[in-house]
Amino acid sequence: MSWEVKPVTTWSVQDVREWLIHSGLGHLAHAVCTENLIDGQALLMLKEEDLRRHPLILPTLGDIKHLIYRVNTLRAGVNITDEREKISLGLIKSTSFQSEVVDCSTSDSESEISSTQNGNGHNQGGSHHNPTYPMNGGAPLLPLCSTCSQHLRSSRFNRSTRLESEKWKTALAMGYGLCVSWLTAVTMTVVHDRVPDMEKYPPLPDLLLDNIPHIPWAFDMAELTGMTLFVIWILVLMFHKHRFILARRFFSIAGTIFLLRCVTMLITSLSVPGVHLDCKPAPYGTWAKRLHAAYIIWSGGGMSIQGVRTCGDYIFSGHTVSLTLLNFFITEYTSRNIYFLHTFTWVCNCFGIFFILAAHEHYSIDVFIAFYITSRLFLYYHTLVNNRALFKSHQSFDAKRTWFYFPLFSFFEQNIDGRIPNEFELPLTSVDLHNIVIKFSHKFSAFSEKIPSPRSRGIKREKSKSKVK
Image 1: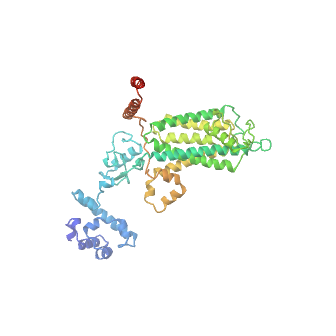
Image 2 (image 1 turned 135 degrees about the horizontal axis):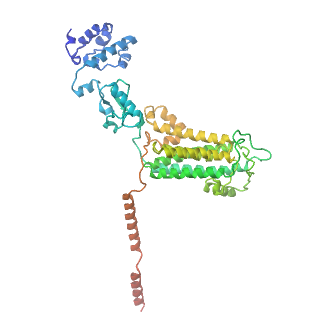
């Protein structure tokens, strides 16, 4: 048998036929050799999907598995030193696919899996270190299985490769948010006209409000809690490297939620949740008075500590929306290692909701709906954008569906293809400050040159006097 003494890469079609017969797969020789002319090199490149598809289409699962087993045995015994030939035969993957081949070792694989899952470059015992993978930016790689040697990039490092600030989109998102906030203020004046009479429609039964005593100062505490979260979010936004992308997302999500709140407020008018509230229909008479009242609500941010008093805007709670949205944005765009900050924001969120209920300013269902809608929309939005690469392989259907159901998301995030890294920097560097000072000094000097000095004005006066004489 000549095929036994020759390298597999030099086998002819006849050698492959004899090898099949010797392996007990002679009944496949006609399909493999006669019809498809598989020689030694083609045999080493055979994959299971090749056996299932045209032109081979082997009908028996047992034949497919036995043949692949025999081919894998041949691959394991091949001795080829030329790396290019190995890549050409598919024995190893090219680095152009961002994968590497390491020595197959169960202990190495287990240690790399453990260290990668721990989120750092070392395993728990500290005795093993992950290798460096330059094609993946030094990020650890996950093995496909515990016994194979091929490593691919972990999905934990699915960061966006395009981080364009697109300030004009941020300006549009800000305009969208401001327009929705103004529409919310106008809607509040409308629902205030329709607030049910407290004598005819008493407060509805509520499991929590009926068992939580009324605390007069609780609503002010809820707003102070919201202001604390807002200050933290402004600081995060100022020092985040990708602040314009974050601001764009904040305005688009907040605008959409409050736009939905306008609809729910108009559809249903609930009775006042507490007898302590002085809520009566407020007919404004003219649209000028209504718009003036809306401006007071809008400029005061709808907060009672700013002197704003509204009634009828119960489904759903805007204060709960603000607390929850600020909490989620702060925890999403700061490091996971800042446990104190994340714990603090969640405590503020929970206590803020408790204060709203303790003040009897909203029904429990208002608070529950607000928290659920805000958290779900935030999570849906970020799940879509963090897995943006999934849509690029299905442009025919998923992309169109995304454009239809999430038009704002598709517009604002069309150039983002992954997770935004939490990187921080100063809003203005020393170079920026230096350029601003130079630019200001140039403008100031140019302006000062245009202004005549007192001496030149005196000379002009003397010349004018001499001409008169």
